[in-house]
Image 1 (tube, helix red, strand yellow):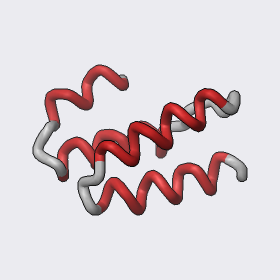
Image 2 (cartoon, rainbow, N blue to C red; image 1 turned 60 degrees about the horizontal axis):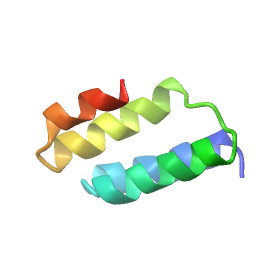
Image 3 (cartoon, rainbow, N blue to C red; image 1 turned 180 degrees about the vertical axis):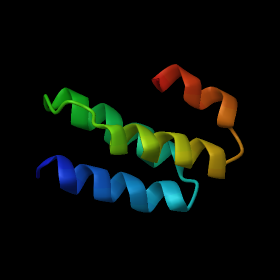
Image 4 (spheres, one colour; image 1 turned 90 degrees about the vertical axis):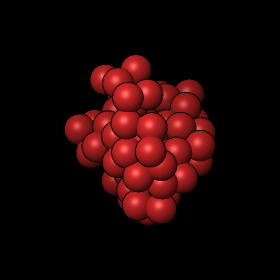
Length: 61
């Protein structure tokens, strides 16, 4: 799967506020050698904000 696929999965989870799944996907993506993209970070921030943890999203910046 390419970066677009990873970002699509992360975006889907982030809309539901499933920050744990987004973080897991982010870790898996980095483990496989894919570099994060602006949309990747947007998905992470969206997930944390939707889950009510906006301040914790800063560590991924």
